[in-house]
Image (cartoon, rainbow, N blue to C red; front, side, top):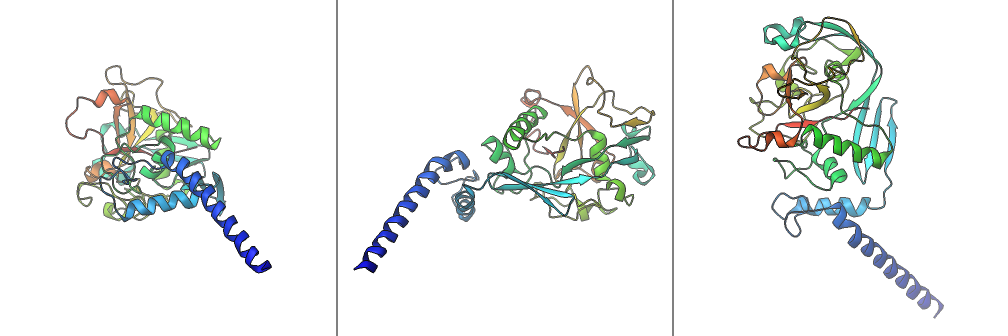
Length: 319
């Protein structure tokens, strides 16, 4: 009889525990997983095994604390409600910024004059920000190429990125930001480990980036191509990436600089911010480590533009 009552108590305790877990899921899941149709939690327009996996990930991680774990002294892994992302520590140094010799005739006038830049230590995202991380922070996924949350987020303005970063900093207590243009190029070149490649990690673009010749007119999950010397992925293709700096007057100063943050204001007519890196719809010449471009920083600037105007622009974090 004593064993029977013991079994009953165990059953009751298990039943109560299940009730507590299901209640927690019921209240938390709608805040963590949102879809466009009932059951379509990854918002790809269909209810399938990917949705099941997303739900399981949420349930398993629902009480997991937000953490930052240092890996081998150089890579820091952050966890935001079960979504992990890596920041790579970059040792500072001095480099030649702009259209250096390996860039050849592809370098445009905006990449000159080549000038010396000295940077302090910083950290930069190992990959572009994914749709999964954006949704974990913002509660929605704005991307045109949805259906796989491992793809980079896109269709985000510079102002959208500032809102994302503000919320991420509130969640982590850290000071994430967009990289400066100089930091971005230094990291893309491989930092102090640079081997002088034309693209980020190789002289053969298809080894390291998704561009117009191999992307099949779409983005791809981050980190599938070869990494560069620092272990960074997708800096020469997948989506273009916002930098902190104003694009300014389009060209550089020849004066050596220390930790530059770009001009104080943008071009009077366009107020552009700097874009770096290649993208799925860009040719090889725009995927080089020194290639640069400007784009309007706010969403309103794109509203009247034709067909998916900025589904090739994302971001990479720095700190």
